[in-house]
Length: 214
Image 1: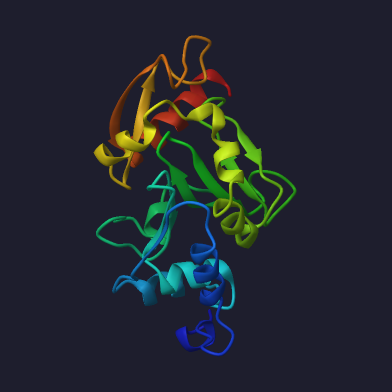
Image 2 (image 1 turned 90 degrees about the vertical axis):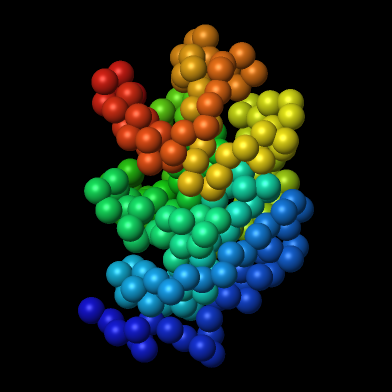
């Protein structure tokens, strides 16, 4: 197991790349300050700050992107209480949950449990309940999330007035829809929605995926 000194690289850290993504973003991209758990989180992850994921985990409390629609996990912050290590306990196997969104979708880094493309980012889509490969790695995922490609990706999962609705949901919550988005009757426009904890939504998605065979 590598020590904290092995993992922290002050000369070749990836934090400038994260700042560059934020400054060049086509929409709001907030970098949250790191928490006092940053050392513990980095040690548990065993990735260096030379990597983008290591920089986000150690140097930030997380990232809130596009009015908080997308939340990328770091070491935790009052605005985003979850950290990447504790959030994965009991929830992931063969992958690492790294981000989620306000419509109950989850992003994970494949460790071999989602397909043969280890190191690729996947999305657990709320409108299909299926894991979909994005065919990019973590660093490119942050680049993708800072561009207009994010809006294109979510074109079918946004509704009129969603920006105003973001004010009523926190970064540790998401909207739950009924009828479910993956059903024929469900849609972001027609389904009723309410704010629930992101932990509750993840557990529900897992249960539904198991019972429906998706």
